[in-house]
Image 1 (cartoon, helix red, strand yellow):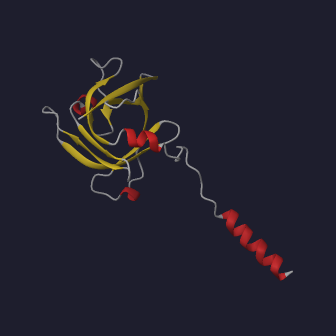
Image 2 (cartoon, rainbow, N blue to C red; image 1 turned 180 degrees about the vertical axis):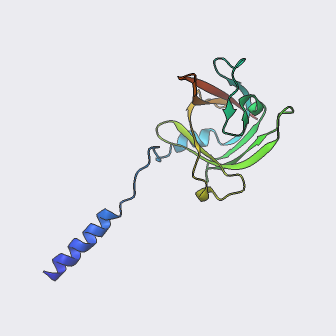
Image 3 (tube, rainbow, N blue to C red; image 1 turned 180 degrees about the horizontal axis):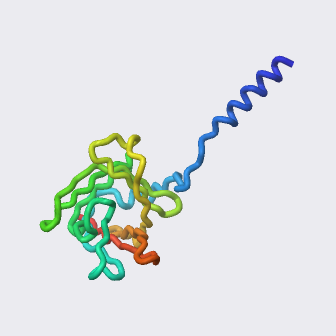
Length: 157
């Protein structure tokens, strides 16, 4: 009887400690991660109404300030760096952590002088049109109650 009680106790502990699953799928798409490994530059940022509407991209700057920014993606440790260097905008650089999940989402945290595990907020974008020399990240934003796509066009450096 005692052995049964001990077995039941450990079974309850094992099942009671199962970690919660997150909304964002954390299974990695390593093939796509390896495909975007390297140095990239954003060559354009487009969205409907871009001549009239300003978008504060990644809570950092106007989306147009990202044109010309350079990005480095390291696939073996899912780290990297982003550097904003547009002449009419405030300069900014920060390490990032990132991954691409099996749902095709690009998940990124801007670290900016913190440890990655202490940064609790990040960004989830869709990756599209991946080739050897270019890809797009697509963010959905709410403009006047309607969702529109902000498309960041990346070209390999």
